[in-house]
Every structure is written in C-alpha cells, then in structure tokens.
Length: 391
Ligand SMILES: [Zn+2]
Image (cartoon, rainbow, N blue to C red; front, side):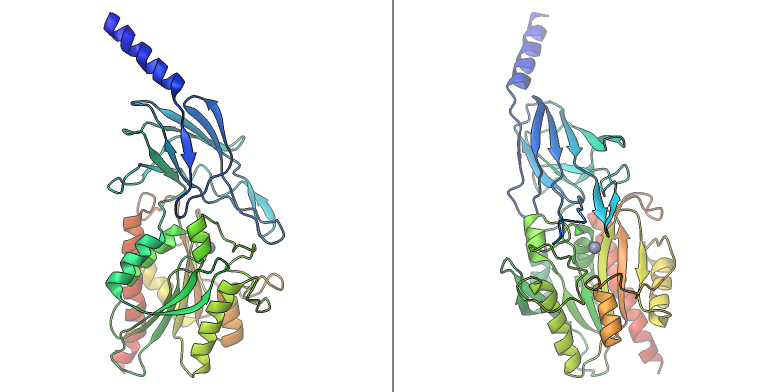
C-alpha cells in the first residue's frame, strides 16, 4: 500500500515536472504555434500556407516531433488553426473527421498508425490522445516521404538525371529519363509528374512503386520532385514566392518568381521542339476524399486508362473520366490545361484520396500507394504497347 502510494506520488511528480518539447527542424517538418494547456496537454496550430496574394490559405500539412514524454504517460494534443480557403472560397480545411492524424514512435522501424482521439467540428479541432512507449513520437497529416527516400529509388533505378533548372531555394529541378525503348524510335513516350504539391506525399509513395516497376518498351520521362523547396521545408502547395506549382502555367515566364514551373515548361518544350512526341502526360495529386482522372475532352486514351485502372487496380474513382479545360482566370492554368491547350498533348491529372477508400476498405498507406504506382506503370505501358503489338 505504501509502495503503491509512493509510486503514484512519483508518477504525479514526473508528470508535473514533464516538459514536452515540440520541434519540426527536420526535412518536411512543419509546425504552427504551440501553447501549453497542462503538463501533458498541448495546443498546436497547423502552420498552413497562403499564396502570393495572401489568399487560399491551405492547412493540409503538419509534421512534427514531440519529446520529453514521461514513462507510461498519455499526451493530449489539440490540433487547431484548421480552416482555410481553396480557389478563393472559404472551407473547413483539409484536416477533418475523415483525415485522422497519423503518429508513430520515433525510429525507422515503427509504422505510421492513425491516432486515437476525436474531431470537434465546432471549433474545429482534433483532440488526440497518444501514449507512446518511448519518450518521443512523431505526428503528421499522412506518412511523410522525403528526399532521402527518393534518393534510395534513384540508386536502384539509375535514371539518366538532367538538372533542368533550380528552385528559388537553389535546389535542383530534376528530370529523370529511363529509356527502355531498346532503340525503337516508335516506342511510346510517357511523361510523369509526382509531388507537384509538397503536402501530397501519397503521390511520392505511388511514384516510388511506379519507378521501381517500369515496363520495357517505353521511354519514361519523370519529374519525381516538382517542389523541392516545399517538400524540404514542409510547405503545402505554393513555392517560396507564393505561386501554386500547379497553377500559373499560363503566367509569363519569370525565373525569379516561378523558376520551378519555368524549368519544367522549358524541358517539355525543348523535347517537343526537337520533334519528339509525348504519348501520355500524367500528373499525380492527392485530395482528402475525391479520386478521379481528368484530361482532354473525349480522349480515347483517357477513357481507356480510366477503365483499366478502375477495373484492375485500387483506383476507386468517385466520378467518371472528365475534362476541365476552361481556365478560371489568367494565371490559373494548371499543367494539363497548358499542355493540352498550347501543345495538344494528351495530358491528364489524377487525384488520389487520402481518406478511407471503399475498395481498400481502409485508408491508403505507403504500401498500398506503392502497389498502386506499380500497377499504374504496368497499365500505362500495356495500354500504349498493345496497339503496336497488334499491328
Ligand atoms: Zn495537388
């Protein structure tokens, strides 16, 4: 009895003395204001990011570390500052009841898992309850994917890497070429973009599986890392000057304001100017709950790709293949609107949800995204190679 009381006293003492520390000083880290509600209860703001006009605040990325947790203690975290704006319309934000936060113990061997806790739609906020086995844990919107992981792919795949420009933060803009045409000048050419928006790590997990499972017979041209500053610094969807990496494709070329878009644009145009073709261009994105494929109107290739992905992969669209080529306003063209409009390329955009997937019967994970990437590479190659093999 005395011992129990004594141990209880020790635990209470440890809790009262607890000094939780929160940090995001690592690649892809992002953290807003932190305030202490109690020794084991923190209120943490999502940093969010606004555009060049201070509009369209999007709070869809956070990734931070909490340390100093006493043994066996439960930590309460209130995740706040969630509402934002999208295409100039206010919204409740990307962090909702459907996007439960992920956490893991600090250490590579630990897997990301969904955190316990409740979403309060009134404030709105997430109140999370985390009981780590060790003193440190990580919390993020979805499992992060950093440059280190991409470098591992690069080592395995051994692409021909061209640095086609630099980001505002002087990081290289890379175009990877994996020419598996076997010298066939008629081989299909596929251009892919991953991670146009920094928060969308799901597209990098898919890219990881995609790149490791390329089929022969195709020339693969890949932009694997479209926003190097954003990913490194925990950004959301804008570059350091506030320009959305998937808008502004019709804006004037401006190396100071939009070097990332300019680098990619120039590389694509140089390819076309040499008389090369692009049979398919596809950019991958993440949304909270939507999943779809859009592209040129009445594109046979688009409709076929949509059909095979729906039938044979985990792609779980919430609408049919569609086209949205009308630009909202000058400077608002995305990459596919620009490519289809200016160069008549079969350019498509795919959104993959991060919330629950009916087909998977769970939320997508790094493993399922990677498996989807592999399946996507296979279906694209099959679709483009089949007509030739039948000729
Ligand atoms: Zn996106």
